[in-house]
Image (cartoon, rainbow over all chains, first blue to last red; front, side, top):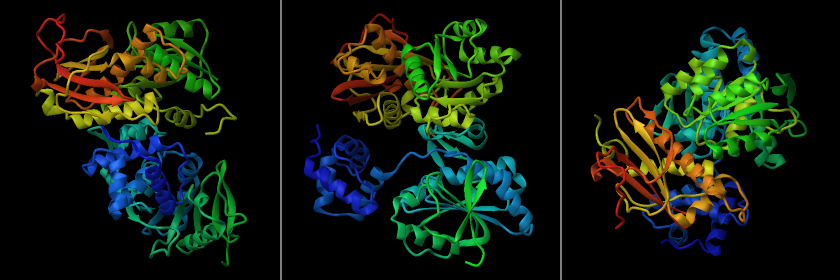
Length: 276
Length: 127
Length: 163
């Protein structure tokens, strides 16, 4: 039998996660910590989570630390989360871009904070189904702060529980195949998506320029000055007539006034104002 | 909104019904396809039917075919909720006329996501 | 005839499948602690099972230590801690767990295969070790086993002797 995780071990894990990700684990979540970290402990050849914590406290190892933080901060994401930013992409946004751009020009879309890739592949599947002529010129860039998430996006493989989360069944059978216990996205769609590591709070590398940016449910984690800084940096890598989609509970209003809010479906999109 | 929950497992009927009731649905149970047809024939036509595949008397696939063949029941959205999870099985169910497909095991969020997708989330419920 | 189950599946995959079933059905923070493979020790207690017919023929059996069945039923049916589930509730929950485990295992086998309706009682006698994959696990301190066993010619009335 393995030993239970002591309070000091749990507190250490909480502090680590808070320091590395700004995410706060509530007291009483010892069971969650045990459950989420058990696979990592086994992978390292240790009998239990208490031993894992002891080992990493005694000998801090960046790979193990990263593993702990990622195991405790990853959330299940669903495919068509708040449908509007996706349906307006094929009904309004991409047709407008097709008309505005030269036929040889790529249409570049950025899925910022892509998690395990559901958003990037949702965009890809929608375009492949509704606007196949546009799909061939669309390039999707997917970025995330987590190396594990970037690798998962690249692999394009999802568990049964993940494909159950808001992925329409006709899309599942059209674009995925079963590989063991998982579902794998079609190579053509994987080819539309390029995934890389990126910290939105840091300086941005050379990117874009993007026609459409999905920056959804990310700003909520940052304080107002960092939010403004991120929005400014995003605008610098966007085309002047580009479209920005934020999460349903997010807005640029009162944060950064260089954006114009435009109605889009039942929700809103944001576009850079002229002269900024 | 109304939902018919068709599964030979009482446990599963209870789980699915309690998720749907949490979203504001009125539900009725049926233990197999034939029993579910009785409910429809009696005039209780729901917005949604959650349908298990493997059941005694009449299985889920047969039920889907019968419902889709009757124009009076065209308004019913048919969602398979089953442990059958091969690619070919999902193709078969959609070809028979099912609109959506949830693989067991599932979470309450998975049902909620599908309802939102189908436009069957009662208003006033946060998605 | 297909290859024996030990050539088609490994214990780790079965444990992963069972883990997903547990977290979705028993509770989000419920964890199955994995035991041993490929043929772990037998667990004494109520069993439920489903048959799989196709290129590979056999049964997927879930066995739960008696002490854990009421707890398991309460978790799946979201009953209060002081509620005592009926025998019918327990049987029904065990059957549905076997059904879901069986369906997920079936999807990993060479197909097409057909799933039977779940049953409870004394499970069919298991085949030899080569055509048996058993993972043991522990949930809230109760022992569980998932046995994926080839169809056996032996009479179904004989029960396995626990070592």
